[in-house]
Length: 359
Image 1: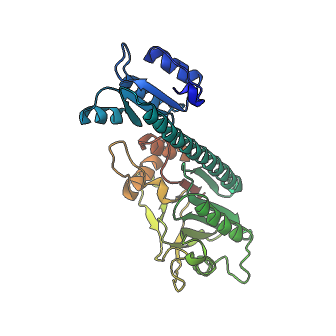
Image 2 (image 1 turned 180 degrees about the horizontal axis):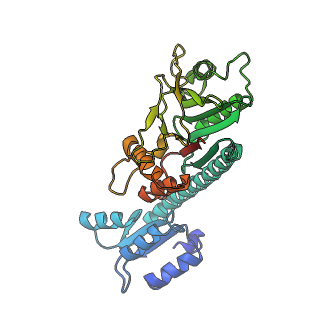
Image 3 (image 1 turned 180 degrees about the vertical axis):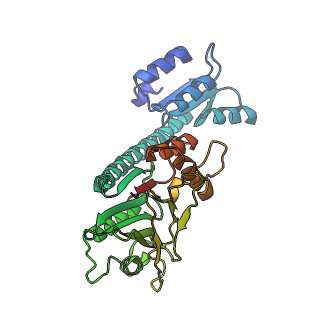
């Protein structure tokens, strides 16, 4: 009947051979008898739907079983439709046409998904190409940037304002995807080029205020971002900083007794773009020799563990303290702990972390 309708049909005699043929010639549709020797139609259906190469294949179970419990069992296995014996020609044609339409829709969606993932991967590569090179003198700055599968809006940079002052910042745009990334790149380019004329880039609170006025969320597809911005004066070992809704930077001083007293560096301030009239304040601290400063996005601690619990900031900070007790430790050790503790193969959000070692 199907061949007379112009369809190309491959007929096989059992489930095992059917799966083998499907792997060689991926079909748009499979019509499979429920009751068969060896692999049943349910077995075949589960295999097909669990295969990444065949999961979009429209699967029809051919059965004489008509109870609700049987249909539920078939649906749980992944069946898309049922045809009850004896087969009626008009019903078969109608169900095949409908199934092929749904298969084509699934294929289109799959193609769009792959295209989007490719674009996100390219965007992640572009963001990584913008990031600064690690620094080894007069400070040691290392970082890790692990983009999420959807790509978030993390971005960071550090550069010398002059021979004595180093600017450091990390921002995190709300949401995921290209819109979030485009906003973070816009801010990145603006700050690196010092394109806001007349702005005192040595004063963190003024930088945040200028960014808030430049990027109102109403003009950015309702996107806003958090940011931590600091300026370090090398001769005086003084760090001036301000934050806008961002997690605190963590300053871990050297402690030969392995009981370091950490400092959470954060100032009050709303995320950038939320409220035009928002104000931001500066704070300063002295940086002792051999201290370590960590600046990170919330993707570093809002991760799901294997038991379903969320890490949280306190657990992350304690991890920093524990690792810092190890002589000559590297940032990679912290990242490995985060990856090992995570329950999924990829992170839900971008993971960005900078480690600045002061000598």
